[in-house]
Length: 78
Ligand SMILES: [Zn+2]
Image (tube, rainbow, N blue to C red; front, side):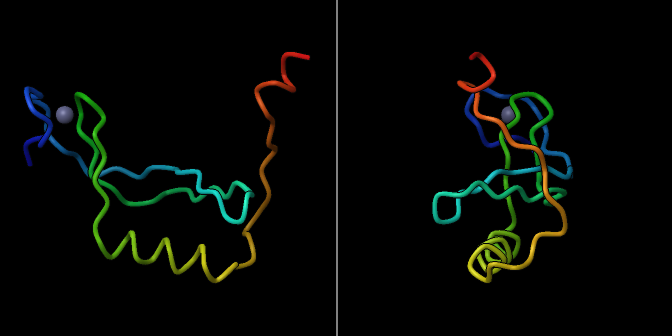
């Protein structure tokens, strides 16, 4: 499918992306989200069902599968 961004000639490809969400002030990472990503400009489209599912997961406060190291940029420079 051709990219919907004006003047971009890229094509959307099926990929898995990682996204950081904020839940009650805390960052939550969800990995391997199926998405369509433009191979030129990077524009990303999520299916409606995927978006709904993400909201369900974030609302449900599901137990994390694992924990990741997290840093703030400012802390890295001090
Ligand atoms: Zn594009």
